[in-house]
Amino acid sequence: MRLFKLNLSRGHKFIPSAVTFGFCMARIVANILRIAWATRQTNVRLGIAANVFVAAGVLLLFILNLLYCQRLLRASHPRLGWSRSMSYFIKALYIIIAATLVIVITATVQSFYTLNADIRRIDRNLQLYGGSYLTFISFLPLPILAYVQLAPRKGRAQPVESFGKGSWTAKCLIVGTAGVLLTLGAGFRLGTSAMPPRPVFHPAWYHHKACFYIFNFGLEAIVVYLFLLGRVDQRFYVPDGSSKVRNYSEKRKDGYAASLGGEKVQDEEEVSEFAKKRNPGKYIEEKIIDGCLEQEPVCGMSPNGY
Image 1 (spheres, rainbow, N blue to C red):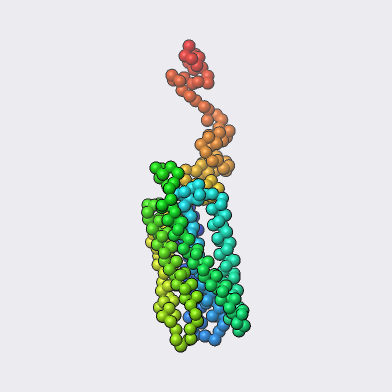
Image 2: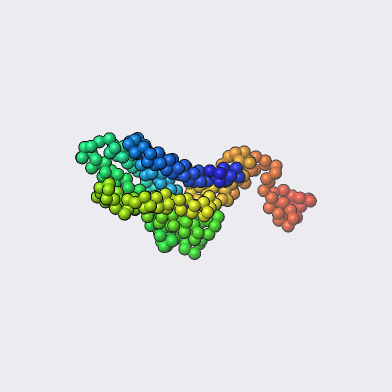
């Protein structure tokens, strides 16, 4: 949060930094609830809250990594990345994530308060669906990144659109590494959830506390430090309003237009025309021909020099 506020004070608004802070706070709350639950194991409400925070918090990292990957796709393959179909597809994924989160929370709460075998089976299937979908979301940046790197581009000789700071390779490595780590954690959770239940006194190796903390909080901590030390706030920064103009170029005229009266201007010609209207005496079209103005005679000479 300090980094977000520092950047914001410099006019560098990068909302994913605040989202990462929110994820860290959610993980702190999850661990507090788990400690409280360990001291009050018969408290069902504490158990529900602890399980919900453990399962839901990592969603923020999934969304951030998918967002960074989407920016790479738009910079390298703008026709596909900025297409309406791709935008609708990504938005649909976010909507399904929200719906899946509600489904999983409902199934988790219900499973604590029922002994009906059919209802518990349905709740378990819903939880497995949620784990499968979240694993898919964590894995999705990897095939997109492979497409970004391997798929031919129109005008291959031209470099990809530049945005943020740092090299293109470093950006791809950050997204790829985070994708692998997040997929590993999500896959472990899904695999252990799909295994048949075991007696409390005969747990499997994956029920050990070390496995739980390594494949959950440990991998997530590595991803957070990867984003922090990799300075994603600099590498993946894009100017405000990029979605409206469908490019990441920072050579916008919005700031200049604002200084001229607050109207939005998109290109040089519009800026010039707007400036002339604001101050026609200052912006007279002057085309010098042989030291004389084209519009009016100067020094007793006509425009043709006679």
